[in-house]
Image (cartoon, rainbow, N blue to C red; front, side, top):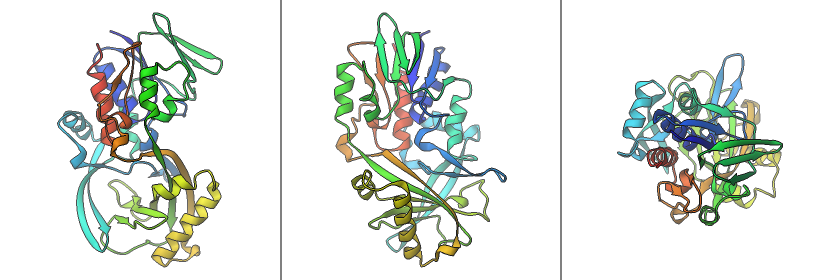
Length: 325
């Protein structure tokens, strides 16, 4: 049994922690946020009714599930953590149906289910690590010591922000480029569209896709909630030029114009800006499953190590956990 520290409680980190715990290791998760889930998060929308909107990764495409993770995903399905969503997509005048899986009752429940029995130290941003027979993690005025193994399950850019990362992992992380995505959550008095589909791939200069979140399984059908994801190119180019209010105005106006709706039909909006949301180009994923340093007992996992999807992050964490010496 090893005493393992995992930095990052997104889907890669909690998957890795879950599998490490199953193998008998003593695991502690660290995250700078208040809880788990990372980019598969759900925003509380209405406290009274309990409505949430999935503001990050909206679903798992069935075609992304490989033999590596099939048993892992089946376990989540058996535990009713994932629900089948035959997603109908409108794109370029055509409508197609794709088999997808969504967290039930929300996407963030996937990470919460996996992390439910794992020690979590939240709201602590690790800014320095050091190794002298065992690992020490530094966060502001706190030091957490005595770990045999350290796993980094954070975006490559955040790896670069930590002092003490071995040079081989640092160099690989430095080779990764991310794009931003601006996401607006919106509730309307009436539907944006009346066609028989749940996702509209707009693919315009500002808006990439619009998802009718209220049409997911186990959602509230009479609350017309949508998730609007921007084009990554626009979001990345203008990320430092525009503030959140300006981004909200631009996306809202583009949305209303596209669907020929008026502002009085909007009940509420909220915008979130993801600076490290999308790997830019297939060459920017290392496609190595996970990374193991030759300099110290430290490893890394996440989509940047393995691929471009939520399943890539899950599989990266899973593979790492099952390859610890």
